[in-house]
Length: 202
Picture 1 (cartoon, rainbow, N blue to C red):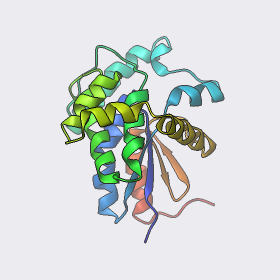
Picture 2 (tube, rainbow, N blue to C red):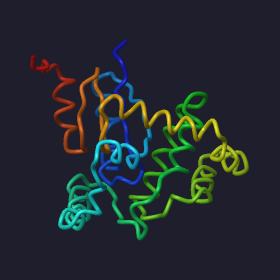
Picture 3 (spheres, rainbow, N blue to C red):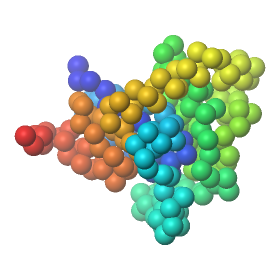
Picture 4 (cartoon, rainbow, N blue to C red):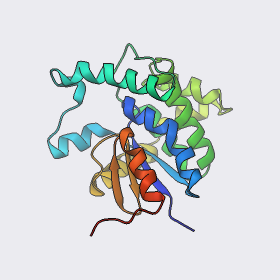
């Protein structure tokens, strides 16, 4: 059985959203599963000495235009949120809370959160927003609210972010295919090219 594709993303990333909308179908075409792994790019960027693109002159405004254009090119719904970038602590914790025991539900929640934030422009940073979206998938509101605040869940997100950085993850989306990294939603064609049998150089 081939190993799953590891999909690292930050909910604050519009390109992560565009990658999320395509990776499952791409992987399925080649008999691969996908492990969705939310991380926080802030600590990773601090560690490697980079800054969020939106904070950079010229590149920040360009990103907003480019992400919307890329979404239109792909035929994917896109609405720039009024509040962006967000600190994606609550949505990321909620996904990791479910990841081990209910992985299919964790996946569906990640999709729903991404669709809400970048598809419809909703602010998903607050725990209340996460609870509301999770309730739409049948999750108990009180249980979700409590789970987001559990120390073990907070520690899990922190550990997964550190593990991602140790593997060389530095942006969103970032895909690891059998140890080889592909950064960006615009690298999915190359990822599929590799899955189709193109050998690695060297």
